[in-house]
Length: 255
Ligand code: NAD
Image 1 (cartoon, helix red, strand yellow):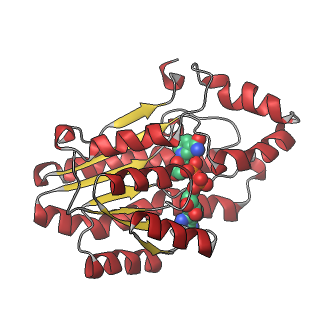
Image 2 (cartoon, rainbow, N blue to C red; image 1 turned 135 degrees about the vertical axis):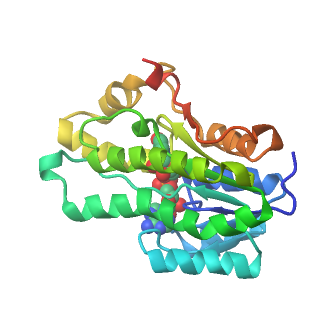
């Protein structure tokens, strides 16, 4: 498959799943706009590696999102492919959940998906081709304790994606969610200390008895596996897949 001539924005692509998706799309020939935070030198190296632009828009800031989308349209055109992937997590019981963490998770994990999509859709519809791929989560389908904001945001992403799919169905634009189980990335690694503290567990107990407890394969999904599904969703063969919430969770939500 070739994506030569296509422009892709991947939010949260300086790390983890987003970076794997950016590499896969770029490898297929797409011109990629990277987004996300990180070390300047590492971002420069990624830009070079992928021949990509980088826009550091904060996904919690609608004005910065609008600026990034305008910049992409002005400098490269498009985007033809929009991957909403940026996300954060915070682990805490509801009655202790810091309201500012709730607001940040809802803004970055859910509202940003609305803002990028509303700016991207008109050009996609005009071209009669577009791909919107949202990294949701198994937590768009089921809950886990202590993740109220994340579970709420990801359920919202799944609902939003279905709505966009219906609205754009006749325009050659598909909108889908990929819902991974636990993928070994910095986002997962970072929540281990909080879960250890909240539940009084060791690191090994958190890995095996909490994270992988629900994942029947007993192994972490890899970012590359998620990227290969994203790449497939960009292909012509996936033109009729829209409004789907595609699980990649080692059987977690089958149980
Ligand atoms: P990660 O921490 O490795 O990467 C997150 C990316 O988002 C980074 O590039 C970071 O700079 C960026 N980011 C964070 N806040 C941002 C902001 N305000 N503005 C712009 N960029 C921001 O995490 P990951 O595990 O690769 O997660 C990527 C997506 O996958 C998230 O939406 C996450 O919820 C989802 N997900 C992850 C897992 C998992 O187990 N790792 C499972 C299911 C879903």
